[in-house]
Every structure is written in structure tokens, then in C-alpha cells.
Amino acid sequence: MVTAITQGIKVSVEATYQAEYSSPHQHHYVFTYKVTIENNSSHTVQLLKRKWEVYDAGQSIKLVEGDGVVGQQPILEPGKSHQYVSGCNLSSGLGKMNGQYFMERIQDGTIIEVQIPEFQLISDIFHN
Image 1: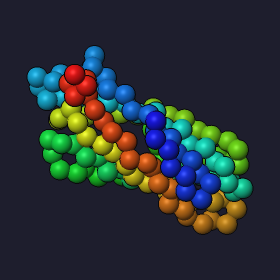
Image 2: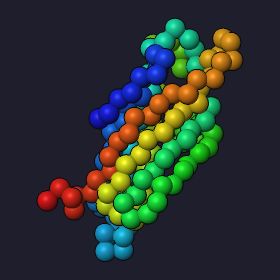
Image 3: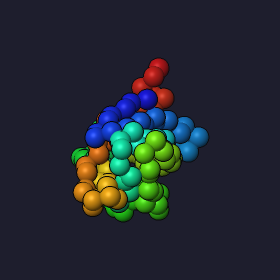
Image 4: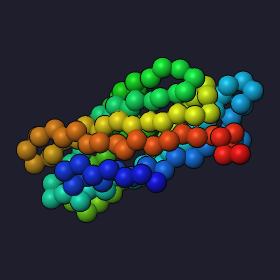
């Protein structure tokens, strides 16, 4: 698990290779990642947007941007957390991801850019 803290917002990510859904002979590798966002600040925040950089050893960098996470724009009061699971496909069994969440402080409308720590996507073929 990797963690980053930006202005009191803690983001932790744990990635898992999904061998049962992957087809290495067809250059299809599936990964899931569990994200925990903890609001350790004194402000209530809402996650508005996300921006991911996906690095695949078999390709160039892919940017993924959109509203919220898995169809939600959670509001986190101080001391609260939000957890979700998502996934990505790579054409190689080796890659990494990182990015940012764009959150709004509800009290004053300030937008903060929260770092998502870089994490590795490594399939079983690289563990032998």
C-alpha cells in the first residue's frame, strides 16, 4: 500500500493483479485497486474530479479524466473517509498509475488538488 497526504487529505492505494480475468497470451492484464480517502483536515470537502496517468510498459502514457470516482462525488466531513475499488487493463503485465483528485472545500469554495500516490501494477509473470 502507498500513501500520500495533501492539505490533510490522506489517499492510500493498494493494487492487485487479477490473474483470473487476464489473458497474457492475448496481451490483456487486469488490475484492481482499492483507494481509501481520509479527511484529516478541519474542512468538509467534496471530491469533484479525478485525473489519472496510466503508464503501460507496452504503450505510451494514457490520461484518464472525469467527474468523481466510480460514479460518485463523495462529501467528506472532517474525520470521515471514503473507500472504493476500481480497475484498469494493460497490454503488458507491467505498469504504474498516479494522479490527482480535485476537491472543493465546502465552506469557502476553494479547490484543492490532492495527490494520488504512484503505485505499481505488476502481474504474476514478473514475480517468478
